[in-house]
Image 1 (cartoon, one colour):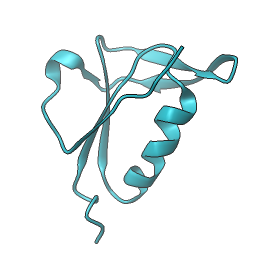
Image 2: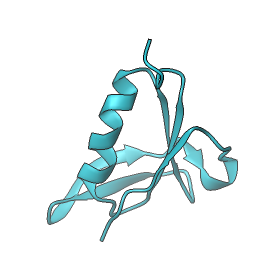
Image 3: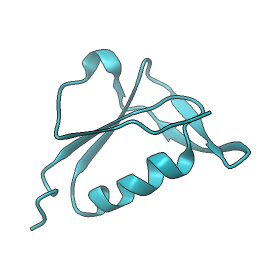
Length: 79
């Protein structure tokens, strides 16, 4: 079993994040069994930028006030 299989990874993002900086890096950990949560200031669904226009939507499953420390934090850049 992979060492990442039981990891908890938190992604903090909001409207306008760079799609490739959020979605691509999380494919591997998810595929290996890590739990990944997307957190934002409020519960919502937001859109990413790709590359010059709005792209894919991502649902928030935790608000920042509900976040507890996990094993890793991902903070993608945006415009």
